Image (tube, rainbow, N blue to C red):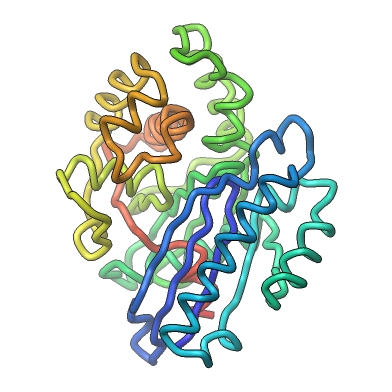
Length: 302
């Protein structure tokens, strides 16, 4: 068995898996939402409270790994992405994590994040080696797009737009008005215009909390079941319906209505959906294939 922990802008995810020649077999998954990247976009600093919340989660994961098998502690890879990359005090945070958990943290560059996400997203899907894939990873601080054929990654890029970053910038009102929403859409399109649209045909695959949460809600699940969520086709019509619903609700109302999947995401889910909707428009797609894979799967696949 091997394990990975992915420290994102909004969430911290843990994966335990068996690795074989045929790929990864998922044994255990965990998710917490301590929001390390709160206000990082504005302050370029990781707040001490945010750091403590994340380190507490990592300690909790460490205890869980010890219960599963103590040897996992030496077989765990810990990675961090956008929020840590952007923070001026990231060295302080990395030192604290190492001192309090024993694990060093590997910071992924935008390119590494795209590469790792590509490999991880496909680990949990039925992949045709002849098909081209475009992986869309809408994170809290950044959005990655990665392309390839089969499991073979070819190229990717990272954009400084994410559900937390854009919520803090543009959607600060309890219920945003149309002008704020259009401002978000305008800035998403500005980012997308800086990169070429991948040549068709391709299969568009989405990872991370925005797409997986919406798929689970649309399927009326009562708990997070990756084996059911993987491969679900989330249509643009469904995405637009969620945008219409959430743009009229306060974050606490969203979390009360969908506590299983949107607890800790109520104030950022609208921005994530707007990014998804604009990407579907930009790539002329009617929907997206959902994958619960991601960075934590990709680093173990390597």
